[in-house]
Image (cartoon, rainbow, N blue to C red; front, side):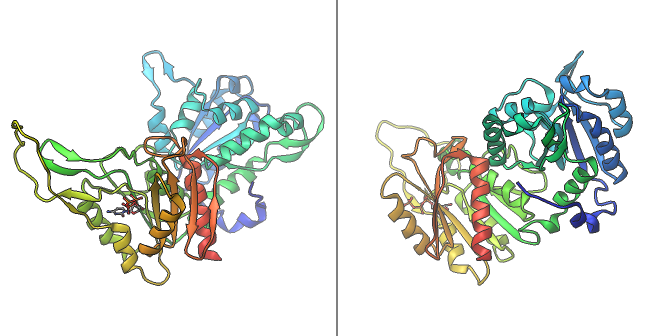
Length: 414
Ligand code: CTP
């Protein structure tokens, strides 16, 4: 967990939140009364704040207090009379989602993907960074179940504000107090200030998804790539402050941060052209797309009719985008490729690292039950040009993306 001292934030204070959209989630904990001050501080800093409360939170503080302070109606229900709260759009509206206080119960539900109230639905749909300020008694805070749940949500890329040591609701003294509202506000300012992040000022290019190679107006050659790994990488690079362009094959851009520039393409040729267009101004390029290696020699403008015999389709090679960019790479540019293998995994990955002049190759094997197309998890090994190798356990793709981005940050700084 990051330990940040309030004094370090002072220079970021002045109206740093002007125009920033923040969701403040409140769960059932005695510390909920402090969130009124947090909301007031955020609004004073110029932020637009929407408050979402769990049903249990209403036992600790009234929605009226929070709607008055936030100047927006407080959201509590997925359904209200005939109205449905669009949790997906709420998650996309925000620049950041802050849950303060985060109770032990909601933490556990988040770690396990439960979704029985509006706050959890928004959390599961949020494309923005999520910052959490836990509050609980020391025994609950130190329980192995809580430790595991915290580890799990940090793997999802969520940020946890350290709890304080002090007087607790139980009357005991110890760890578990929610951080003070001023501290949380400063933490948010610091977090949202892009200049503090490790890839601030860097431009990144990511490819993701499959490509479709059209045969005629109704048929194409494609593959099962969902684009999830590349989308998670684009988000992880963005969360570290990079300005990201995502060149995305024909899949939907779900769960993508709204600040990421998306260039939609269909074919390998279009993907290549889109990459070439930005590569020279790019600091980091991550090629996560499953690009077709072959494309039909000719595109037939009308639907090809069947006849009695067999049909042979002549294919020609596409440009290997990673290899081509490897040939153009200049000093200081970092190029990352993937290797999806079924056999001789390590040898093939190392061959790709060298032959494509990449700086890092991320290997995933189709022999791993947790890796591959369409899955929500991945299991990777990273090989870098300096001889470094790092294996990772199977994780959600969002967590894998954070590992890859952390690795590339360490690699560039080494
Ligand atoms: N790649 C690319 N352009 C292509 C083919 C692949 O940019 N035309 C990139 C992929 O995005 C990935 C890496 O090259 O980062 C390796 O892709 P992979 O499909 O594992 O290997 P190939 O190079 O296609 O080789 P093979 O199919 O023989 O394993």
